[in-house]
Length: 586
Image (cartoon, rainbow, N blue to C red; front, side, top):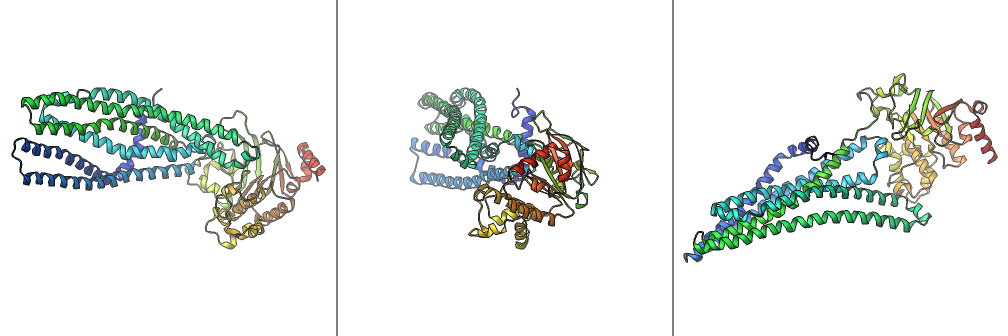
């Protein structure tokens, strides 16, 4: 199987991801790399200065004044090196942080555009790993990785040229061990890529496990499952460490191999170069300068392994980021130009059939229905298709052309955002932000006034509960609203939907935790606010259903019956059983 990062098409795809960022900051990078190359060449001048000093000493022609001038020159070069290092570190490493920020913003923006099908396939832990570990690896590769690569290339080529200028034969002898390092680096880098990809995947799994455990901590404590959770976390942590150790073994081999190669070259130079000094083929100053240039080559040789490691990590992570950014929403809306307006909110379903991705059994089958303004009660057994129907109306999943239209126009013709902008949705699983009650309610309308927020809270029968808290509307609800009861969370979510004041309101079993009295208060408010608009209310409570305009009973993805309370008793055995059981428990 071809590796997507090494195939020409895969590499082009990754380059297309980074190229615009490099172009945008080309001036910054040009100045930074110019400063970096300047540092390298300034460092290469120092052995030449040492050569002059040592040759003058060996010839007994040195004076205090000359040596002092050479020392001042070295000091001046050191000062210029320090200044240029500051420049390239600020510009190049600063660029890598800007690149990281740009990619993170692009990932976040892209995630906001994806639909539920995507989030059903990707775990939160994996997404967090992409936004943390993977971006950090890309940042290192495009920061210190590029610096080390350019630095090693320039330094090694220039040092070799200076060595050749001193003695060609001695240079060839010094470079004899180099092919060994090149071969070892090629073999080990391939293994590095494989193991690092595994490390990143396991980091995502570990992150998701921790997130899940923290979110469900009450459940874990309620079932006394702390020890099994701890053992599972230890197992995942052990796997993660073992994979990191495999990477560390490869890293541990690359560094010593580079050092060994450099030292072998040094050993050969000491032996053969020493003989040349004794025979007078080169001067003592040449020998010292040659040793200095060879010492400068040790860093590039060591950098080969380190740079290979950084680029392998960065390439693996960039491939994962690119894979995420290639994900596309399955919910599309024509050319995105046609806008749904308040006049188009009559919903018609014709042969509506839907199967969730990965499933073979349809969740909805041949649903034919016309929904006009009014309050509709949706009921049926668990898994009968009620929630699926609501999600399709809300454009959370894709539907085929011709199955749903609004105001006589195919739903797929409208821009998705314009459809959702007409729909208020309260799902089965209420989500609240770790923020104040006020901000949770005003989330859909940040510009709403205090009076409008409180009016929505009163309509949802939560206003008095909010005032009972110490800080009132400024009270923090905790993560996912952990400080609130189930009924309070549902009413906060309902108040948020009511404040948005959409033409269609969908409440998918969003009143299940309310008592009968509060439920009736909420329903009365719905009748008043949504006159002339469409409300879909999923519920199993007969007292609530009988108050709606029409009741729709679902079973196994099909519609069994439609009518008011009395008509449903006569037409649906399922509804009859619901009425009888709830009357018995009354």
